[in-house]
Amino acid sequence: MKTTEILVVGGGPAGLSAAIEAASLGCDVVLMDSDLKLGGQLIKQTHKFFGSREEFAGTRGFEIGNLLFDEVEKYKKEGKLEIFSNTTVTGYYKEDGIVSYTIGEETYDLIKPQRIVMATGAQEKRIAFPNNDLPGVYGAGAVQTLMNVYGVAPGEKVLMIGAGNIGLIVSYQLMQAGVKVAGIVEAMPRIGGYWVHAAKIRRLGVPIYLQHTITEALGDKVIEGAVIQEIDNTFKLVGEPMKIDCDTICMAIGLTPTCELLWSAGCEMKFVPQLCGYVARRDAMMRTSHPDIWVAGDAAGIEEASAAMVEGRIAGLAAAASLKPEGCQMLKEKSTDYLKRLENLRAGETGAKIRCGLEQVCCECWG
Amino acid sequence: MMNDNEKLFNSGILTEEKQEAVLPPMDLWEKKKNGLVVIECPQQIPCNPCHDSCPTGAIMAFENIIDIPRIDYEKCTGCGRCVARCPGLACFVVDLTWGEENEALMKLPHEMLPLPRAGDEVACLNRMGEEVHRGKVINVTEPWKDCTRVVHVSVPKDMIMKIRAVKVV
Image (cartoon, each protein chain N blue to C red):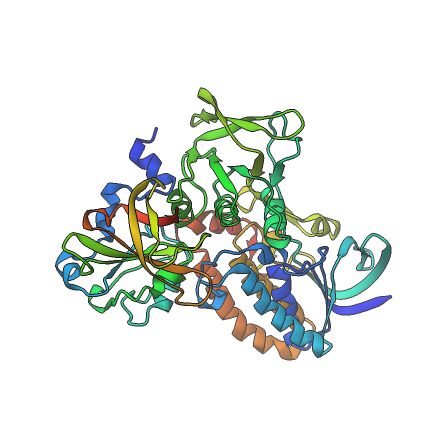
């Protein structure tokens, strides 16, 4: 059976960062990702990132992905890092610590790692409304994949559901791709994403319907429109239904952490609404209640990619240092800086929710 | 329930009562060749590339990354580097010394196709995307060579706090 010192599950911003840090301490690392191409959501992000210089602020997301790929390449050449793309990790067996995976749809195999970093990311939420099974109703991730990875326009006129950062950013990217955005519907009395993201869409003429919801998709075989309606503070429908002309409905309702493997491993889990679902309890170094398993990125709670990258670096470094006593000094030095960066990214009004969520799952250290 | 102004602001429109806070001092602004920056960034978010991109230190160092940008207008040269760097496209430069008595030059961020070209007449849009003027493009630059353009467009002086984007027509 194949063995490795460290297995990183997921090749998005958190997983890539974890693999790079672990390899930098001299560990043998295997990284598995279910997609054909590494990078997770980063490769679809054509907008410039927020944050500070350390998180490559002001650089477009896919270019940040390229910078991470350069680091990955370096450790691949040194033989420290092995990449399995198109590979889905399907199970963790806690009796013996063996991990099962499939490559494509044919090959099934097993690997026994000494340590694991779970950076499995997130899944999109959906909402129910009549006709939401018609072709033309997409999740925002699918729209971004079609548009920014494969260069295919998802439709001609899109109604966006949700004004969080994803809804706002994908709306902007749709306009850049020449697709009309009929409007953005948001149930809350304010946009959930950054104000500046909303401002740059508004000034291009896209309406944002606050305290509105979609009540129905119109059409027989494909989407021919949508009906939206105002809601009050108790989410009860008020006012008159309004018809929106569109051929595509894009849902950016929110994400929930992908945590099946953490459950299988018996990690202590907790439902934390502020982190958008069940997440593993962990210490400051991202170690879960299972002594061999670390967690990072959206799998640890939904946040921005900039935070995912820093969490990944901490988790990768800490997992590696647990195998290499000589790495402990490095962990001490670097983690102080990384933790400070996370604190900065989570400061202020926009980070309040995350801070509140983290208080419920972070422990000082495992006894 | 929210009043209309709150509702507008909560959907990404800088309402009039909040516009005052972003205005440079008028006496300096009227004399400053190449213009001064106007930054419409009213929410604390973890972001500081405007400071990092500023070659003169006019956008002051952030004590905390979530601070709202503070500007030393004496040092601002209107170069427009922040205009092209800000991920939120929230920086604009307005040059009141440019052109005729009642004209001004605005330097606006632009990331949409088709690209405007110098000499084009473009639609000038307000914060809600309504066309409020047709202006002439004087220059188009790409300060960081990263596809974010800065469009220099001539506008009437009394519209500098209305116009925030251009569209090729």
